[in-house]
Length: 168
Ligand SMILES: Cc1cc2nc3c(=O)[nH]c(=O)nc-3n(C[C@H](O)[C@H](O)[C@H](O)COP(=O)(O)O)c2cc1C
Image 1 (cartoon, rainbow, N blue to C red):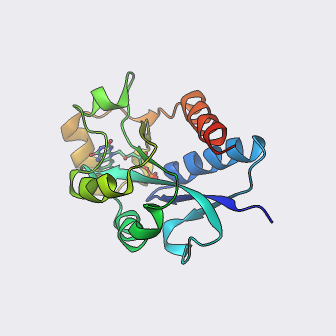
Image 2 (cartoon, helix red, strand yellow):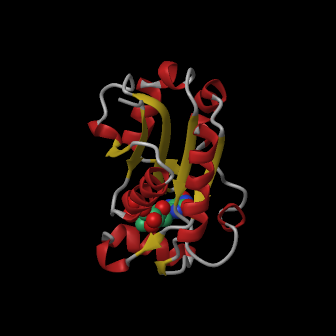
Image 3 (cartoon, rainbow, N blue to C red):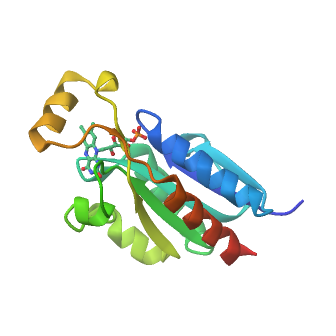
């Protein structure tokens, strides 16, 4: 059986899980076997030839389970092709500009430097006030972050297609 591509993700409210599913579909359509799994359910990278790892961003940080995955699998990932993505900003325009130059959590940058990912993407996210806690709503209102689903499916699909091309 061909080695597979792992798309591992960390999400709180589901928006990043759907981005991961879309990435997995695009890689599968390009003819590569993929598993799309939450980070906490992956124990072993041995079946995989490449990893795409993504997390939702909350207050400039990746989700704890994505950080745990990164730390637990650093050695294995340093030996294979790896891509990172984050998701979060709402509003129109380039996500990195919307987040004042943020592209990846600073605390995990040393690990990323050792893994040397092929690319680090930052995608728009979703803010659905009906799902948020009161504290989260207040924080979002304080930052005047636009509410809605700003995910750019074309950008996500073409990024995933480029991953499949690189692996073929
Ligand atoms: C309390 C709170 C803090 C957030 N902080 C950030 C942030 O620092 N940077 C960012 O890009 N997005 C931020 N977001 C937006 C989320 O990343 C966005 O809602 C994302 O789509 C959530 O993904 P999930 O549904 O997979 O959890 C924040 C959202 C909330 C509710």
